[in-house]
Structure formats: C-alpha cells, structure tokens
Image (cartoon, rainbow, N blue to C red):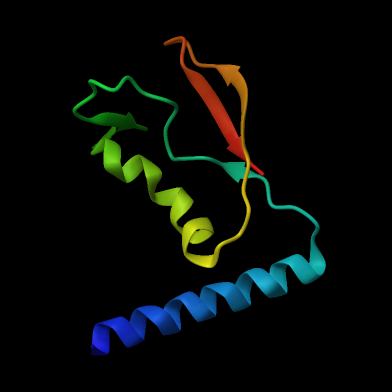
Length: 89
C-alpha cells in the first residue's frame, strides 16, 4: 500500500509540473520515443550504441498516460531503414 501511495504522490507532482509548464508555454514538442520506429520482429533496439528492449522505447509516453494529457504523434520524416521518425505534440 505504501508503494501505491508513493506512486499516486509522484503522479500528482507530475501533474503539478505540467500545470506549471503550460502556464508559461502553449505546447510541448518532444520526440515520441528514444529511438526511431522499429520492426515488430526486433528483439533489441540500438539507441546511440546502447541496446534496449523494444518495450522501453515507449517510456517517453508514460508522463502523458499517467496525467491524462492529450498528445498527438506526428510523423515528420523517414529513417534510412524506411520507418517513420515522429514527434509528439
């Protein structure tokens, strides 16, 4: 139960941070994830020479999921592997 309460407090701090941020700025533009799109068969992804599990490629979406903030993922270019590179607005 203690871990649950800590996580709820963390989410509330995150919401407070976003409230403060959006009182100064109208939008937040950031990468959707730490790596470009990858094939569904990928076992590991290369992020600047570091191998990461494909599930960890979604970690940048967590703040939006936890706070309920609306977000839009926009493809802006293709990587040399032919897959999309994206920003989150």
